[in-house]
Image (cartoon, rainbow, N blue to C red; front, side, top):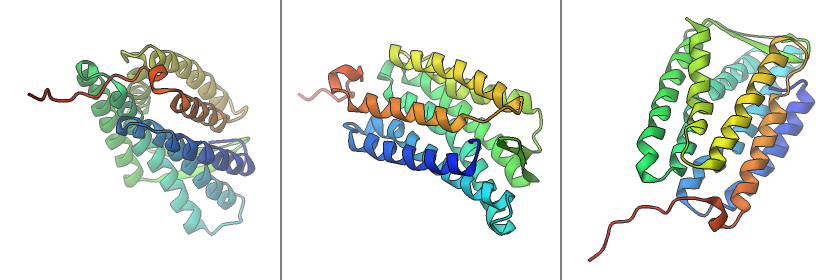
Length: 222
């Protein structure tokens, strides 16, 4: 989500390029979910360009309504599962069970949110410098809190120190961006998506020894 269709378009292209670079530097299958995040973020931003243009009267209602539905499907159905899954994939075997509990929580949150999207109605409208999406959600505050626990909480509870630091910074950033968005000042989620994507790409560019990636478990051969 960004403050204009042009900003969404630029952010989507830039993040997409970053995502391609991140995938080029993947050295282990366990890093693929992490590298996939910028690609998902880029797709998310580009989809919203269609929603912007539709709300401005430049795209047929059927097209932009489908784009709004797809936008929410990514935010509600993909991100709360992919983020903790990417964190769990990086964990050493002895800590992976705990990490997978966040994946299960994310899947539960995604199921509840997607049920609300499928049931409808789904609405999108322009409010100042952002698009406001509306979905009829039962106990929305609780579901949003569980969403944050599944995504940011999975990072804060990681056994890897650099992942915990990312989780802490992400928690502060999400709180600030949510306040800016709720206050109607401006939406800068796309900027944060770009920052996170750059961080992922830089991390994957580091030498394997500097990534602190636990060795993959292999059976002992006799």
